Amino acid sequence: MPTHRQKNNIQRIDSPKDLHDLREKLKEQRDEGKVRIRICMTGCRAHGAEELMTAFQEEVGKKSLGVEILATGCHGFCAQAPVLVVDPYGIFYGGVSPADVPEIVSETVEKGNPVERLLYTDPVSGKTIVQAAEVPFYKNQEKIVLRNCGEIDPTDVQQYIERDGYAALAKALIEMKPEAVIEEITTSGLRGRGGAGFPAGRKWSFARAASGEPKYMICNADEGDPGAFMDRAVLEGDPHTAVEGMTIAAYAIGASEGYVYVRAEYPIAVEHLKKAIQDAEALGLLGENILGSGFSFRVRIKKGSGAFVCGEETALIASIEGRRGMPRPRPPFPAQSGVWGKPTSINNVETLANVPSIILNGGKWYAGIGTQTSKGTKVFALAGKVNNTGLVEVPMGITLKEVVFAVGGGIPDGRSFKAVQTGGPSGGCIPEAMLDLPVDYESLAKVGAIMGSGGMIVADDRTCMVDVSRFFMDFIQDESCGKCVPCRIGTKRMLEILVDVCDGRGSAEDLETLEELAYSIKDTALCGLGQTAPNPVLTTLKYFKEEYLAHIEDETCPAKVCKALIQYRIIPETCTGCGACLKVCPTEAITGEKKEVHFIHQEKCTKCGMCYSTCRFDAIEVN
Image 1 (spheres, one colour):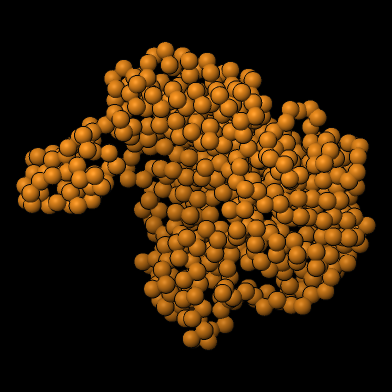
Image 2 (cartoon, one colour):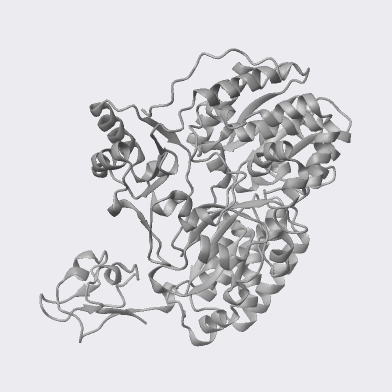
């Protein structure tokens, strides 16, 4: 098990003074010169972080070193997993294995020297970088939501308190009226980070003004976009920031009860969230008469089953109430009639994680970051064909080029950039010609895309944009709740057309039908899922129509992705007859004697690509 900093037996915190005194005591106890090894123990577990942690514990224990080993949340740089930082030197190591531990301990932990072979090398500049703060991936970010992720043990409430945790809650409850809290959030310009971008201050004011008791505050952690893990990472790496933000929001609208609606397939997030709620209750930071203010608020966890539609507010409410998660027409809006017909405000994790910093630093401070209409920062899950995949937080208004090339480190394998898809399955695909586009709500909407919850998938020249549209439409069709005809039937028909085009059975008339269906669904679908579902299709039709025409008119896939339109062929002049392709072919479509030219029988070939990826002599081509 991970070793944590020794916890003190602390009493219930009954006042802001108690909280302040505890924070000062924790800061005094902190030895800034002490060696600490911060290891990502959330997403990096998939790359051996647990074995790495065990190796460090054994090596440090064997040498009886006074070293603190922290099991932290996500450091963000997923492409380098598993990652760790050795403080106070700030030395960053990525792709570390247990075999590297003895050298790290003897050189870095004991002597403060970096292990050269384990340091990060920037693929753009070719420079080897020692300090985590100088790694371009981190250097080009501005962290508010992710300020504690990778820095603290998320299961230790004292570490959160030491870093000004719950100070914003104390300020709100003791120094501010609920209306003043709402005014501060309104001044900040904070907009909902779940996708719609609705002003948080206005949403809270509607709920506060609504009649009916009790009122409910809901934290929406049901992110379901393929490749997106922003909210999950916050709950795994800094759950108290979401709890604190949620409690401040509850105070502002007058809610006494709250729910965190989180996916059951996020077990680490659920585990850390449970611990955060228990610790906050034990300290008096949740529950009855919080900090002696007279305000009481309790939080429950509701685990969802992974239905994409439950990210929609009214479907989420239905699920909390024990009904099937399906959207309903609005009005009435949740602020007037939400959970069990009572006034309810819903914000996603990232939105609420911004709140403590805004209350502590002021709305004007936050409004000074970003653009005129899109304030603050945005967290993105950067994925796809980009060197530096991972979790990034950047100021609104940054260009797509800066995200992809400065933070993301560009396209791997010397390939060229083709497009970036923002906003998840309901987002749009943006071409290379628009790389200088600012990343903000209005700019993305103008080109047919959306901010969404923060998925950002990069495509290179090997990506088929028709296939991308088919993939997302297949996802949407599978996740449609089926309540309204436009989404249930319309997306099904769109998917059928896209499959025909990918298989070489499409026609020019199909493209007209596809576009007509897309606009009809946008105009008539019941909820946001259906209304934005056609975005990937519409943007690829607009910016990459030549690829659709190539599939239809030439019966070819320019990216050589669509199986029905490609063939694998062995080049006689290059084949050495090694037999490697023959051995991996699952359908025995390849024949040939050893040291003789082999042959692919097209009638047996399933186009799985195993032969192509196995051949060491570039003797297989895709036509």
